[in-house]
Image (cartoon, rainbow over all chains, first blue to last red; front, side, top):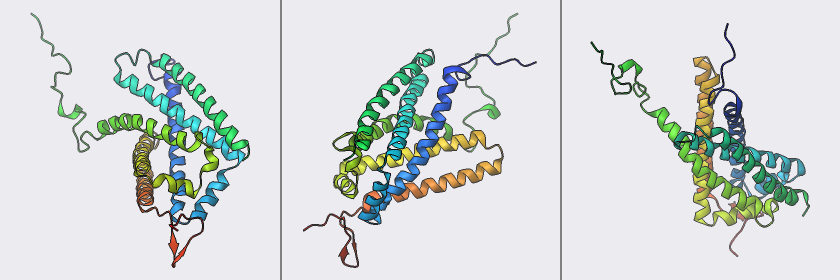
Length: 126
Length: 153
């Protein structure tokens, strides 16, 4: 009768959930990147085509979407640095859990700062 | 009588257990290393990109054709964006490749998903590179400058 496997570095708890978060944010960022290169490529179609499409992005719903995207990018970035520390720093594996809490704390601070600035610009009218 | 036991990892690994054998060589190790090296560089490139485009001045309100023209008039930003395009696309493509390998169990499914992935990556990388290097702030069609362009007076 197999029992529940014991927690290891990457199974269960902080190690596994950070891995899940890293995957999901990675896929989200990848698909955004495909679209982002395509929309920027409109500068080669005509100045008006580019400005029109970018103008369509400038609404409150997209401002929230952009904030979510930046939240995904910042988590992926900080957690990526944590993964590098786990792999290359001698004590990385030992402190991987503490490093995840540091990642989350820095992530919240960064996202708060970004949201305040971006949303007040985007929603504040012009 | 004492038996001598070879210490592990002494380099005497039977060929079928060697990780770097086979036709793929060191590809997976290089890919693993690339994710870490490109990751560090991408943190700097993307944070800089987001800060300059969204946090400074009027933020998102300033983004239009003229904003792009202003940035790409400077080779610094052309190469910044080129490096970001190539590193992010290769990093992302390798990440999605790993995910396909993890979840697509059938060989055929893996193969066609990766074919679509690689085709998309090649198209996006070439398109983006072409756009950065052939950008024209004053596009002209049939001798007439398109509205919104930045043409020398």
